[in-house]
Image 1 (cartoon, rainbow, N blue to C red):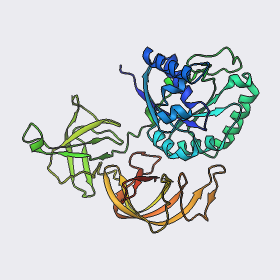
Image 2 (image 1 turned 90 degrees about the vertical axis):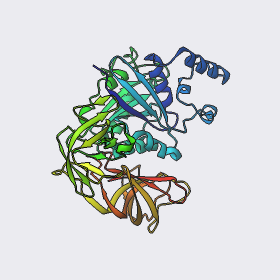
Image 3 (image 1 turned 180 degrees about the vertical axis):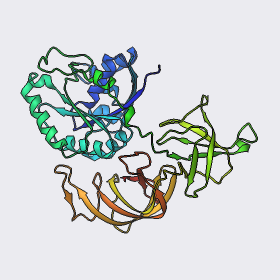
Image 4 (image 1 turned 90 degrees about the horizontal axis):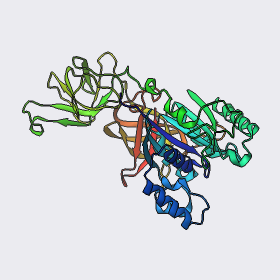
Length: 415
């Protein structure tokens, strides 16, 4: 049986040890090559470190290595006998919060690192809030640098209590706490004898046994059409298929489907995958659907079940994370909007409130969103969009906002 895949992102404040933790996971699970380790060892010596800085395994940009910080999102892949992993190492600096949003948007789990000496910081809270806002269902709080506080149980318990009180106001489905030392490897891949008072598992064991299959929506069929394969583009003259990635639900040959926005219906004749025909398609499979009827379907259309369609709306009320340092989100502004595979234009009608990350209170006096601000915004779209609730479907419940003059992605929205 093929091992399943878990995507997880790191989160937390600056210098909490996110990159070091990932380096330790890669090194202790034998997920790196000898020459990679030797290169990191060489750079560590050149910098005058008296230890091998495993953070360099993910900090790939020259600026990151020179400054000793993470700027961009670094993706790393490794595999154990139990599972495959894709890691998104996200920055901790407040000005790179938008990068954290990018890394966590596709994650099944988030590791929130907390420095045992500092306790919860503004960024710890910000990233935990963002992770739940982005629909990450599993949070693991890694209390790092336990070696620097003498593996004190009271320090760990105090952070657990403080974070639990904060998380009670968030929509957290699964929350765990692990005391670790990313630098020395305590409780990362193997249980540590330095924390005899901790009766939980190591971090890797926890990630290997995290149950995420039930997180996927297998009820509501949503298939955004990415590309139409016409007969002249295929080897067979009578071949016409609709390519895309299954956002949710299960699709089988013989199922009745409806194309939105036209409302035309047909039945699925066959489903083709890169390896050949399949009996069923489910998220996140990329497939080509062939239908029994030639109905008008084009890129940007959404295929659903006739008895379970998405609801169209031109007036959008979204939570928005603003990502642009050059401008603000203000009423009256016009932007391009991308939802699944379709594009439209929106006008900002109103900024309803901005969220204070520290207190989670709503600042209803705010009339704009600046870089890294999160708030609720009312938009008017040039055509109806078929948005689901984000908690039900992350793919069809989210949008990106684009500045038409520069083509920069300036915001991410969640229904």
